[in-house]
Length: 394
Image: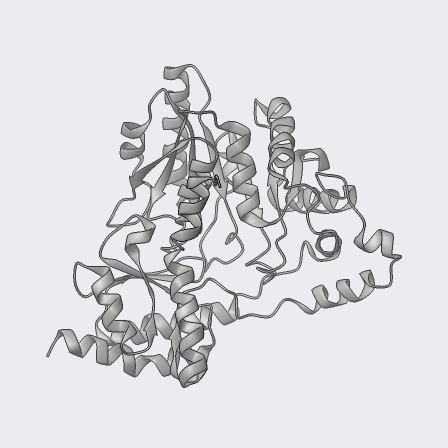
């Protein structure tokens, strides 16, 4: 029997995040959830807004063919209109529904865009540390993932390093701000410098270099500007998901935006639609397309995350841990207490602490601590964090 070896390899080697989460679930079943401090998954603990429940209840009164029937491949016109209207209100733009393609969440959005712009031998630059599935999505699009380390003092984009990594085969740079796993937000000046470099390199090599902006955490930022990237660089494509902003990670609803300011708009739109078609990412979940119509402007409840962030950072700082102050998202990027992050994780695991070692994010010596958990989990974990610190400082 013949199978696809690449697919087999992906299935046989699971994501470290998922493996730790599965271990945490099993451990909770053994000793009780209150005794396990699972900081692995980016699974929002904040409930979806009441408006989401109300929208679903209303949708359930619709005729079955309207509620559950196929939508256009790129999404309901009313849902795309709701999204474009929302973006125009927020960013002073003039987008239309035809600039949008509704998707099954951020993974589908990114995969569609990569398959729309990549050809064999193309290269896509990612800024490490980065969400590890980017590598999978890029490779699946027949391109090569090129890692460029962020500035390790600020975890902003190292623009000079990006410039050095760009070759004639570079088709895109992918960014994620607010960032998973660090929680940093790329400053306007940093993005402007990147945009200037990409324009220069595009001219040098005679083809556009796209900037793919992955933005599922846009609404989760703490008193800091999250610049609208298409305003800074014309060849931008935006990928978005409501998994975090509306606490709907399991419902898989998001979109791709090809801004009408992108010079390649008229070819990119059918390329996006064609990528969705060939990958089978057509007709995003109809029920949650309807939820978008009603809830696209629902505010994100970040108060709980801000409270968790304060409790975690203050608690760990008091003990003595070194970390990057998170500006957005719901992750803390903390330096491991030894160079080997996996060895540090094993010692943490013995104390029922489950962060994620940094190696899978393309950076050594750190761990990601997801604080989208209950406040009680953070508070109750502090004795274990203290014990872990003490084990290194006896």
